[in-house]
Length: 70
View 1 (cartoon, rainbow, N blue to C red):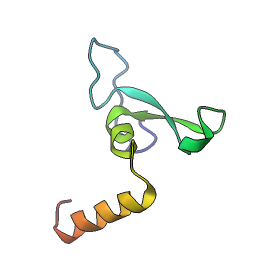
View 2: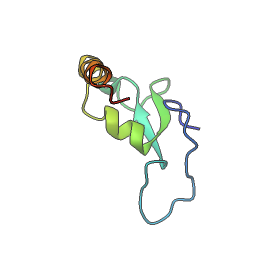
View 3: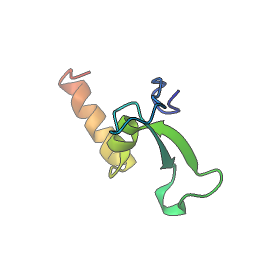
View 4: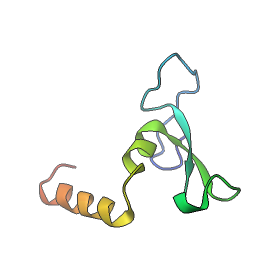
């Protein structure tokens, strides 16, 4: 289960990645891949947060809520 969205992950490791494929994520990117700073989250969640900071994600959420996208 993805720690971020609770989606069931696909551990079959087929030839291509899908939204439910597991990935290792750095919780705080600047700390790197060290103990207590990694999480197993799905490809989709990792892709969404890939380059975004918290302020950007909040702005996106606010925009989506304003336009009833969710």
